[in-house]
Length: 283
Image 1 (cartoon, one colour):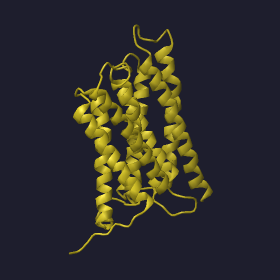
Image 2: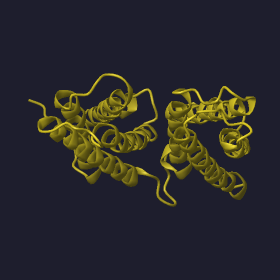
Image 3: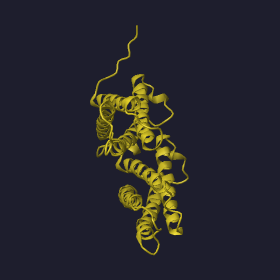
Image 4: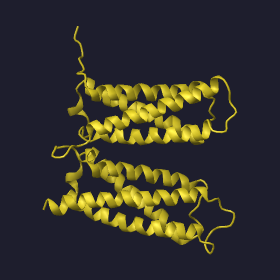
């Protein structure tokens, strides 16, 4: 009877740990945490279930040696999934206790289940961060684009943009002035371009561009930095200045959006610096 032998390594055990931690997190939360459907409960369950499913897929492909038959670049796909999973589990580890443990009156088993889900979510986030650390490109090493610093920055940029979309859409906080709609356009355009780069790299389609990929990255990075710089200035002015502020509007979410806009500006700036060095220093 043929046996499938999976070579053991630190990377394998980190992935298995992440698989188990995410499985326990969403199983415990779904089974005994008494969560209502909708909102942040569904988001946390999605974070754990998505991470579990993708990690299981990566393990099965490598178990059966199907990397060459996969319709994606296997030098880019696993680390992209690990980076997204680490951010998803990290967000769930923050959101779940804030919404379902803090100031809650549940006692006994329900509270225990929620504490267990939070703990295993934190462990999963640490495991995925460990996987990213093990698989990212080292200096002088030949690796896929997504394993490099600019590739990992692309993942962070798209994730931060998704959080911004959630914050500005419920309640809608960009419709009372044209300048704020410009900020929304900045978030959307830059998100689409960053996600397009991720998809091109994972799908091994970068060679189909009409211009060299490195020059495309530099031009798009420069555009994104300029656009985010305007949004970093415009959003706080038109949200918090007394001449433009909407009456009775809560300030917590607009403040969070302003902070995340500044964070994404810094991410795009760092990305541009890496890309400029790649284009001009290499040339």
